[in-house]
Image (tube, rainbow, N blue to C red; front, side, top):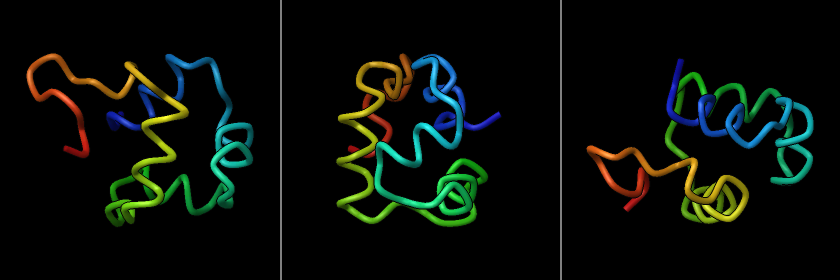
Amino acid sequence: MSVLQKAREASKLTLAEAAKKLGISAANLRALEGEVYLPRPTEAEALRKLYGSALLAPEQGDLFA
């Protein structure tokens, strides 16, 4: 399970709910969670805002820093 998927689940959001809040398709979010590609800067910022501290990995700090 990817860090993004864990963050989404910790935020109690379904894939569809998170995608809608992020303004992207569920397929696009699934690709991000599957690490098919890295988020663009605007996507990374939206992910930070939506998931907040759930994106912080204790050993790594901010996932997109």
